[in-house]
Image (tube, rainbow, N blue to C red; front, side, top):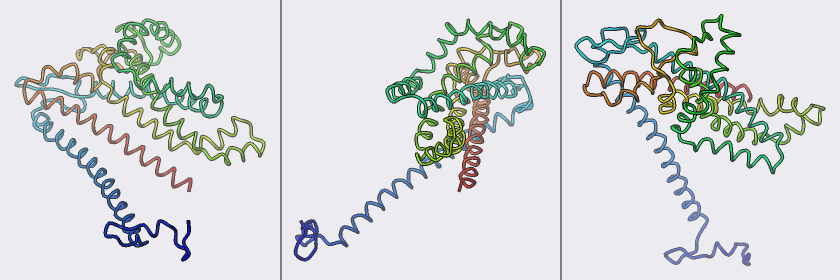
Length: 337
């Protein structure tokens, strides 16, 4: 209740020393809380930056001695003999397999994830949208080993006819040639399909949240001007959500680049003496699967450093992808303003 002097009852509450609580006291308390929260937020940001920097420094320190002893070109060689008196190792096969499987996953997961997010937020009724969103999010809770075993033992057998069909239609291109060796379920293409399923909930969840935040006035304005449902989505929803879609795609790409267990179970390793093939229906190993397969053989500093050097390349690749995404998002924000 207001007092006679016009002050509220809370103004008359005593402090610890018995005097009335003044506006200055409340302001000081608020400023102290702001300073504490700001300090914690700043410290957390600095901690993350320092942690990532230390990881990079550790990888460089551990990798440099092995790289100096390497008798092959690290970036172009297909050999991988990391131990002995004549170490020769290169990453061209690993880099190719990592990039191709991730790009295949992105090619499938991003359009599908955006379409699912649009259905949930723009088309599905309330009684269906919430259960559908929960089911898609549930995919993220499935362990990667389950995806790997499911692909290896169940889904892989159904990919063989698809691989043969693609070879029949597009086999004249070296990129789509399928010889039947290795089995279709052990190829880069099928590993990319499994990765697409694994990153689908990431792309869908972020896109869904962005689409749900589109201002109602934008959508109603488009519809009031005579736009159809799809025209409203194309002119109001998708432009508003582009930065979010890019962020979702880059987060999914980061997951695909670093996925280990499922890819390790699926991919068939290549013999380095075989001729290099650009086909997505060939075998191979990614950075993560090579390190996981040979982790039990880190019995010397030279060998360990070689694998850490491969991990350093993956670290740099992931960093570049995220930095590029940040630049694209910032430019789109500046353009939209």
